[in-house]
Image 1: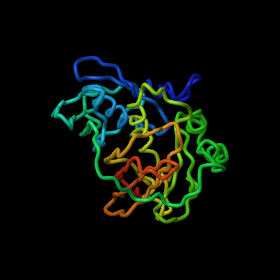
Image 2: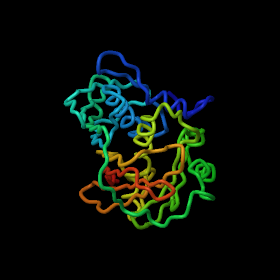
Image 3: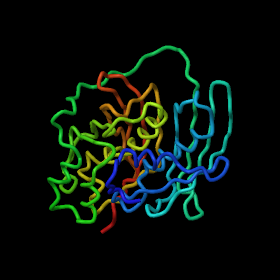
Image 4: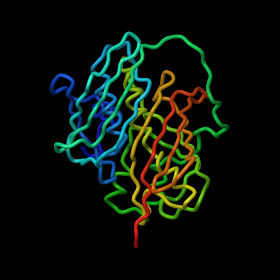
Length: 293
């Protein structure tokens, strides 16, 4: 599936994450080409969460997931998701998902679901970051830098996107300068998500949580995903859902990289609502491999 679409791109994303049931606990999802050459990791995370969610009742909601990327996915081929129903408890449900393409596993995920209950509450405060108003969107940045972007990639970057992202402290992806390993991004779905599809907010957040995270660990080294002397890829991805999520309102993604070593970089993310409520936490380790000349 090509990312350029003449209809409602948010409806297309919801369709992409909804999956087709082909057998008991087996689902099939289509792929989209975002211009990376391979399947976008967030797509596989979101589809895996969707597959796991389809195997239980509506009272349970995902509270955590932990996934590993094992092979690059082909953006021109569908992906089959097999779900192992490990445990069905009264309060918690555990699932394991394996994403298969061309007969081999490309991603595996363990996810836990919780019925929800009352308990103690605390959170880290949201940092004082200016709001999304007036900040250049990624599409606007691509348009401004269009003379530096290959035409085939530019076409996909300028397409209408279901998730709008506004980077508070961006770097020029083709001429980066070293910066502290911190990044702040406002993001939201471009339109309202049907209220009867509450689980979709988690799928879409899982999908969007893969944008920019690994590249935060490249900030202090003056490198980006587009640097020709770098091989960059996601290795694993974890999400903890703390509270209810509304993806059709602005969320602030606070990303920090506490470490890079031995060809890997770790990035930690916190996702807040505009009023400062922490709704999710994310962690990801990525491959940061300098290519030999």
